[in-house]
Length: 339
Image 1 (tube, rainbow, N blue to C red):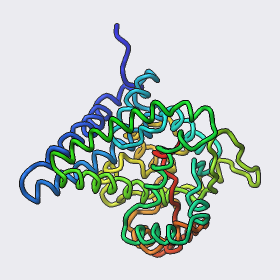
Image 2 (cartoon, rainbow, N blue to C red; image 1 turned 60 degrees about the vertical axis):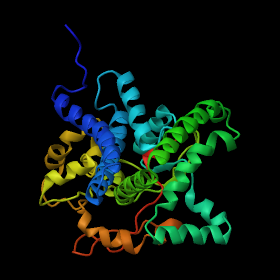
Image 3 (cartoon, rainbow, N blue to C red; image 1 turned 90 degrees about the horizontal axis):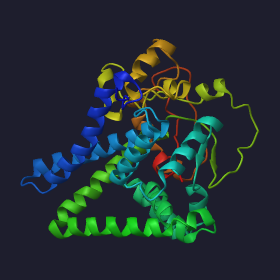
Image 4 (tube, rainbow, N blue to C red; image 1 turned 90 degrees about the vertical axis):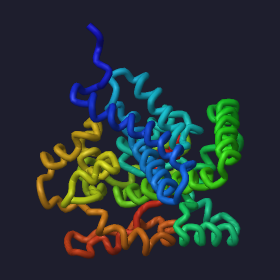
């Protein structure tokens, strides 16, 4: 009798569909970039962007081991999704370990302190980053991804220096692929970049409003200061369920239910397709930590420059239509740039 492939028996169909959508949506989106007509190219860009979003959230699921029964298949498929999303320069196991610290330490354990970096940078560079962020170009995320690529070549860490050959090979393969795409169609290459940056923007919007944790830049090892009690009460109080929609719950599938973040932090081994039910079981209706994204859009826009340099995430009021009006949000905390 063959062993089950998926970790949970009820995960066969949802996980198969999600993985298929990410892979086929990626391929189909690129194909549409070459199609005639503005509508087809626009559709291809949006399909590609959303396939990348699903691939990114699948990486999160693979990191938690919620999809396949065998860890090696979570690892291998997670690496595949990392290639699609452009996060393949970091080792998947390092990404997983850093993300697990986020859960265990109950803090935003980041690899690179972009705020400190920008404060130390020349004024012209800081102004450039702020100008790009004002124009809705995710400059901080681009810096974070660039750091992950460059890390093996600029660090004194023997562990990361040992990755130079692997990273150089990945750079060569991806550069050749994008050069080929550009030779076939410069417009298709440009639209691919647009789709990738849409993915970054979607992910950073979700990431910005899921925690009011303290952030610590830790490359390897390192302890989080024991300056407060970071217990489960602290965890839930500083975690938010920024659902896409309460009225139409199925819309949360657009982010693979990643928005049910309180439920995820309460039981991180529960797979994505069970999170809505777990949320209802744990919290019922009217949970104070629920912040529909409609309440956050204005803050995301208004504070898009403030959060680039300010360590203060802001605060959330207990009630009211504008209770997220002073929630500035986080930046540079993506699990795609953890090493």
